[in-house]
Image (cartoon, rainbow, N blue to C red; front, side, top):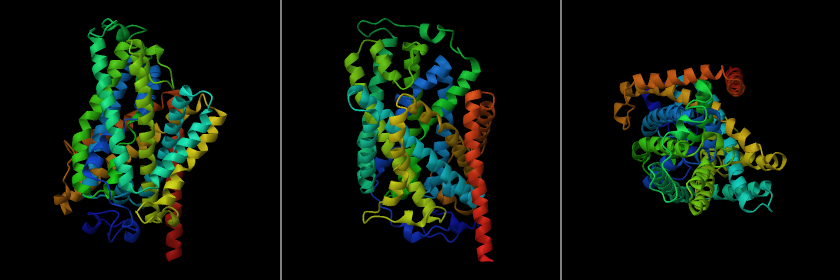
Length: 475
């Protein structure tokens, strides 16, 4: 693919070297405001992976899950900064798929775009399942699969509305999630220092007892990284949303700057409070350790409130995942690497067929909840971490290549700059490569790694076959 300067300003709109139809791209709405973007960046990653899925990570790593979260959060922050740099310079509904295409070639854009779309479709199903489990606990007379069906119908309908409606919904619901975590941290710290009525300071008992800080050794920490990587999925959505913002470059820059360190505080802070107050071997997969902790310190009313917050967080994250998936498949379609029919939009600029296609696996999850209501969430949760790591690796490599190109050809577009470039970029690449290698030593992680790499390789092969057939048609 050509790398002339004209390709840099925008991957979706009026570039001479992209195969995406600019007329299709311009049909998307532009109703996202800066406040929507800022809260989307902060709230997009706060969902079921943290509130519910963290229980799985605590179970495999014990208190050492803190190290897992530090590694995962550090990578997430670096990736968000790299994506922010590229999105501010080249706003695109295809985000990192377009950047991979520019940096590495059409095959890379094809592979990472389809891989990410598939991972988001699984995330939609996982969030719907987790929300259904919460509702089923409240109303056990209603089967879990029925709640999943109702949730999918509701949020597919919401995503068919104008993008401004999506932005407003996410703004308020993300705000509720952030407020809930702040309150949770306040209660947790009060319990740790022993000022909560009816509770005493636990000290380091839960961190050093129960077989120590690393009850499963370093392999537990590695398994924990994979388990919690899923919880950081969603930060990419803000860069996808940039193309539908009234001020793409400025909105992305503000969103990245305001959210990047808060993610670290909220995630690591919350998990630190939980493992300090709650014995790690009491964590139950599928049940929120947040609720368990509040029960432990004797705040039952707050636990009920947290149940509501968890439900809102799950539904909010589902909504963001469906938005991101629909825009990614829309971009793939616009670049002629997905069915062209998916570029059709409504009068308000919503890609309705892309939304329907992205919701498909979520509706299939209705059957999964009917067949395996007790185990489906765990399997869905574990199936996306490997794909996310491959996506992040592609983001980092693309950023290294495109940053050099931008510095030569369009330095004025570098509104957001990656810290310590190129050293931190290469450090992130090396860290992700090390995680991939270490996954080979863990039996459960190895299975997931093989599945992810097999899917990636299959997509690469398909991409090259498509390119070969295209050349033959031209010849």
